[in-house]
View 1: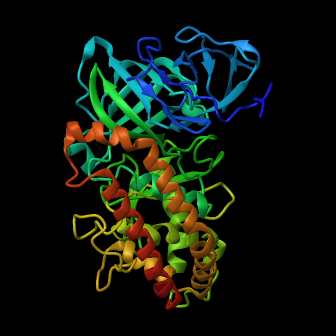
View 2 (view 1 turned 180 degrees about the horizontal axis):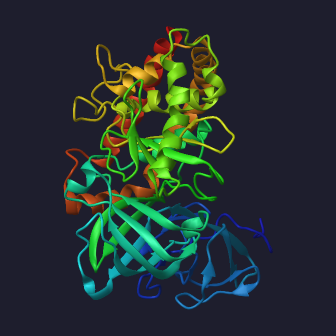
View 3 (view 1 turned 180 degrees about the vertical axis):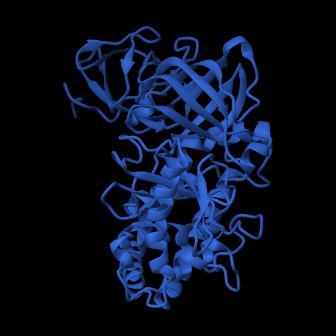
Length: 472
């Protein structure tokens, strides 16, 4: 039988070797050696490093891509999509090989250098700095100037510090809407470095208003690696953030009670702090307080829920907010802490945005994540203001029905998407997680084990909620 002419010949030898060497590609952390299986070459590359120079061995053959000659260790190739190499032999036989990249997505890197390398030691006073963001090919890079200070309440007292940024000029960092104010969450208590990201994903699934985006980022400050963080928006009343419009308000219910303008409500003694607008006189605070208490008095009334309280409070937002907090077992609402509510000038009070899930996932009362998935949403036998106010709202048949309807749909359709999101997020941060642990040593087990615990807990929590919500 004659040999095959001018088409692929399966009897021809494979590439003897194919790799992408660091010495030819300085952006690489190390050489990437490809595995060869039949006519396909597989390699793992960091997402975004698409234009690279490969080194290969193909004895007695000329090599081309779409008719363009390729020279080992010389020719640059874009590997964004599958690349087809053709080996041509002197006897006119040809053989095609397919180079496929398993893209390893990775966290972006944020480098901050303060003027004069001064340390960041205060939650109150900003220091000026330059900032450089390496988007790792997934996002646009950024270079600019910013102010930076500490942030948080209990989290500021932990070894790994969270930060707030205020850019000198508005910018749409990492694909997000342009603003000046941004946050770096340290997640010191979170052994997975995923808890807030999971919660925000759930918030988007439930359409909770103005839910933040979470982008994992490794952070270096003044040349010192600080570890894995979450980059996200500052919760604030802006057109690109919590858009309350002219005459609107953004309130935070929080027992820390540390804003300049604040009041305790009359019926439930809720600690209400005014985040927006920026007040200048007591009469402005009095007007906001009177408006809030108009709604609160109806919740406290003897004829609740058979009055018009839902003319002042958006039922859909309550149900969505409750479901995210139920799913993640975030009991901060009971204190209350970090509980936001807003309204436009003519609209109803609306729950949101969701915020702060460090103490969720079974942590409240145990100081350990994932130990229990059967904790009820509201505290029993407790006089905390948040428990009294929000648990009473939960007794309204309208709210109960919304919870049941939305949860039933989510359990079957939304939960599998959330679990897949957990896998995808874990894939992005798995190497950054290891580097973070080398600095902070906060986890007693490996990353794969932590992700497994999280997913198992979410699945068990969802099963528990089906019964819990069904019995409301």
